[in-house]
Length: 505
Image 1 (tube, rainbow, N blue to C red):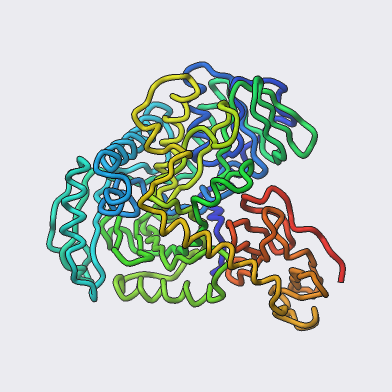
Image 2 (cartoon, rainbow, N blue to C red):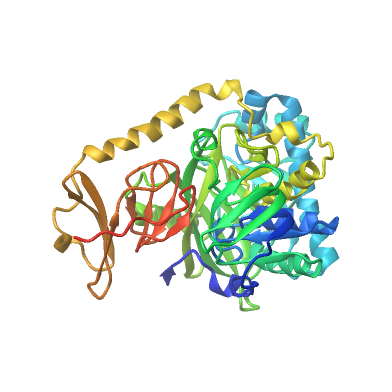
C-alpha cells in the first residue's frame, strides 16, 4: 500500500488532458484554476456563447479537486443550527436551496453531456457518536426542516455490525467520481469552443477594462472578466485569508465486498467529524469504502501517521468486514467563519475580478454552485444567492472565531525565534525532512532515499511563515494560510504563488 493523494486509476484520463501550447491574447472570460469551481464556471459560460480560456499551473483536477471524497450534499457541513445562529433562517434556507441546485446542475450536465462518472442519488445519514447524548439531533432536525429539507428520524444508520443509534436521514443527496466528471466537462467545454491550458502558472492578475492575466512563461490574456478559482486565492494577499483558515483532512479507501454496506453518505457529529461513502472499484466484485476525518490546522500537527491509524481503527470498529487498505491521502479544506464559500466579486479589486474560495468541506457543491452564481454575475443577471456568498460579508456573530483564527495565524510567527529541529543536515534521515537553523535563517532540508539533499528557505513566499514537514505526504506545509510545497520546494497549493527559494548549505 502506498500513501498517495492521487488516485491514479481514477483520474489518469483527466491528468492526460492535452492543452494548446500558448493561450490566446483575448477572451471574454479568463479563468485561473482547472478544478471543480473553475471548470464549472467555464462550462456554464460556454453554454451561453462566451469565449472562455482556463489557465492552470498543473493538470486538470491536479489540486484539491483530485483529493476530494466527493460528497454531494445540501446538508450544510457546519450544521444548519450553526448557520441559523450566525446568519439567520433566511440565509440557511437559501444555502440549502443553492446546494440542491448545485447537485441538480451536476446531474443535468451528466445526462446532457453523456458523462460516465458513476453519478448516483443516495440518502445521507447524520448520527451522534456513542458517548454523546445531547439534543443536537433534535435541534438539527428542526433547523433542517426550517431550511426546507426533507428529513426523517430513523432508529439507526443501515450498518450491519454497528448500531449508530438514532440518526437523521436526508433524502436526495448524491455522489460521483469527480475526476471522470471533470474529464467529461472539459470535453463538453472544448466542444463549445473553450480552451484549457495546463502548465501555465499565473503570476499577475490585474483588473480593469480590459482585465489582464499574465503567466510566468510570458503569455498575457486580456478579458472582460477574470475568475480566480485556485482553491485558496493567489491574487489576494491578506483580506480573504483573514476570513478563512486552512485545515488538513485525512482519508482512507478500503477494499470491500460489493453490497456489504448500503450506498449512502454518512456523517457523525464529532468535531472534527467522520464522513463515509462508497465508490466504484476496478473489480466488479469489489468497491471502495472511503472514510475521512481527523482534521487539524494545516502545518500545525506532527502526528500525521497516528491520525491515519486512528482513522483506520475507527473504520474497522464499525465495519469489521473491511478488506485491506488501498489508498491513504489528505486534502486541504478552507474553512470560512460561517461555513459558506466566498463566491463573487473579489474585495478590494476591480468589479470584473471574481473569486471562488472557502469550500468549507463542501467543495464539490460549492464548486458547481460557483458555476451558476459567477455566470449570473458576469452576465449581469440578478441572483438571490449573491449576498449569501458575497466575499465582502462580515458575519458579526462570528467575531470571536475571527479573532481566534487570526491570533492563531499570528502566533505561528513565533517559529522564527525557536531552534531548528536538527542541528546538522547529517541528522536528516533518508526519506524525511526537517528544519535547520543557520544564523537568522531557517532552512527546509529534505534527504532523498538515495542520500541526496534538497535545501530550500523555510520561509513561505506568501506572508513569511515557517513551513513544517508533513511526514505522511512528504510535503512542506505553511501553518499560516495553508500554502503547501513538495519535498523539493515546488508550490503545490496556494495562496503562495511561488516555490520555496533554493538554498545551499
